[in-house]
Length: 162
Image 1 (cartoon, rainbow, N blue to C red):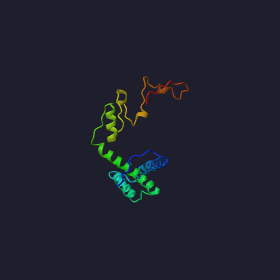
Image 2: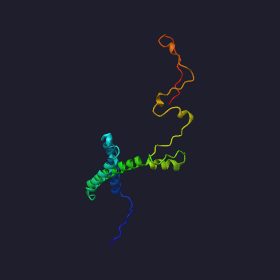
Image 3: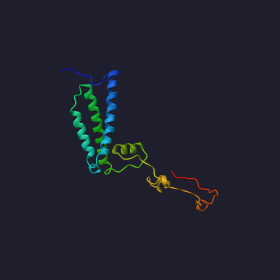
Image 4: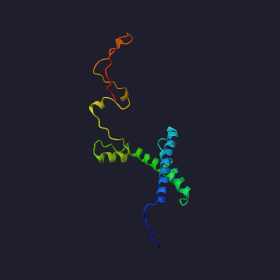
């Protein structure tokens, strides 16, 4: 029985192979997002799991000894990892509450679960929601609408919103 080293010094050949497989894996992940987005909304409950399983099945069909096989496997594994990760996050987010502290552990756990980034809520930001923040107008002076159309200059308070 021969011993095989699991760790080796990087060479230009391994660098090139890893760079190509990494790039193809990222491309596969993005392609899987496009596939998931194009499927009907009625499949939202399970489409990510199906894409992940199909991509793993497809990856098993290629011979990893050949260059083309390695590249194809990398693309399909990228698809499976992305959709599987998203499916797990979709399952965890409703069951695990977001941590609202500002510590790195809170950020780490929120990212691990799949929660959005923690946003500190102040009295000012609590007045408006994220959906209408761009339309929010806060003024210290009322706007005089009587001057419009009269040809006289009208002073409009500065926009202090977003």
